[in-house]
Image 1: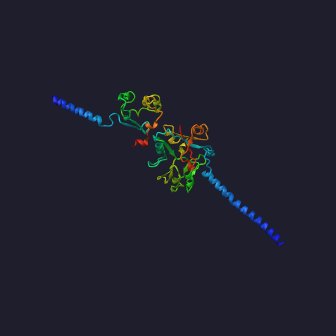
Image 2: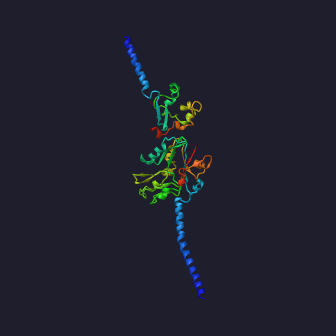
Image 3: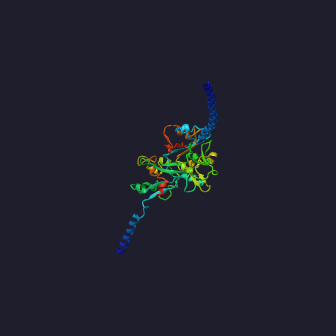
Length: 112
Length: 239
C-alpha cells in the first residue's frame, strides 16, 4: 500500500515539475496587443521580480484579451494611475509619458 | 569725297542692320522669355528660396499642408490601413508608410507620404503632363487618361511616393484625399491616427493648427531630403 502511494506521489511530483518548466506561457509569457492599438508588447519576463498577486487580479485580469478589450486601457487613464499607470508613474517605474518605444515597439517589429 | 560717301553709306547700313537685328531679336526673345518664365511658374523650378514662408506665399486658394509630429508615432499603422481601405491600394504598394529610423541609438518611427512638393520633380519628369500640380491648392495629381505608365516620375520622386496601379493602368499616389477635402473631411490617415501625429490644414487660415505649429518658432521644423530642393508641403516637427 505504502509503495503504491509513494509511487503515485513521485509521478505527481514529476508531472508538476515538468509542466512548470514546459510552456513559456507559464508565468504569463509575451503578450502582443492588437487593440486598442497594434504594435504594443508586454513581457512577463521583465516583470518577473514581482509576484503574480501584485497585478492579478486587482489591476489586471488573467483572462486573455480582457485588458485589450477594456475601453479604459488608454494612455490618458494610465497617466491617471489606471492599469499600467499603477506602477509606471515615474516613481516605482518609468512614467508612461517617457520611453514610449519600450512597449510601443511598432507593428513592424511585433512580426519578428 | 569718296571716303565721305563710303562713311555715310556705312553709317546708314549700320543703322539699318542694328535696327533690324534689334527688332528681330526682341520679337523672338520676348515670347521665348515669357514662355520660360511661365513654365518656371508652373513647375516652381528656380523659385526655390529655401524659406518656408517665402515658398508658401503662393496664391493658393487653399494652401494645404501637413505637419507631422515625429516623436509621437507608435507604428500602429492605422493610417496605412485607413488609406489602403479608402483607396483600394494593393497590399504590395503604399500611399503612405512608416519608416523606422535610428538617431544616436534612439529609435523612432517616421510616417512618410507624397509631400505634394512645391517644386515637384515628378511634374517636371512627366513626358505627357499627366502629373500636374493644381493651381488652387498645390495638390499634385496624376491624370490616368494622360499617363502612359512610363514610370519616369517614380524614378524622379526622391521619396518613393508613387506606384503603378495595374487596375487603372496608370501611376497612382496620395492625393491628400482630395475627394474627402471637397466634402469638408480630413484625409483618411489624419483621421485614423490615434496619437495626433498628422496635423492637416490650410496655411491661409492663420487660426489653424498647422499655421501655429509652423510659425511659433519654438521648435525647429524640417523637411525630408532638403538637398533635393523639392520644397515639400509636409513638415516634420518634434512635439
